[in-house]
Length: 99
Image (cartoon, rainbow, N blue to C red; front, side, top):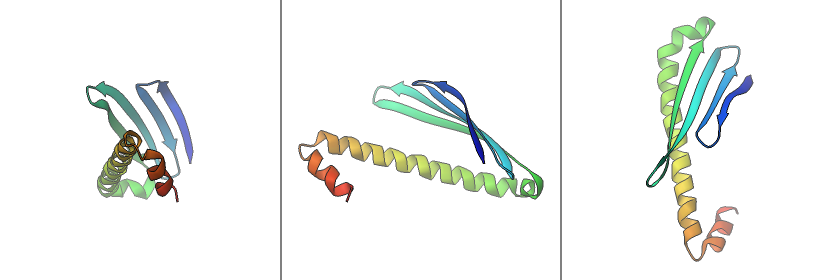
């Protein structure tokens, strides 16, 4: 697998291209300021090769669900960290998380 970062426009955009035997994937992450913080959006384009092409609808649906779960988990984690930092016992709480 080869990953190439094709665009880096800090702090707004990161794009990459992934090449592997079964597929090529191009994707972009965008970060936009909103009143409550930052809104992240993403877009991926996947081109399957060979017999994998026949599985496109199944792989695309599965990949979409996995991406949503990954980013939702990251959001939950980051928002949880923000509340820990804001609390007076943050140092103690952070030590508990890393054990």
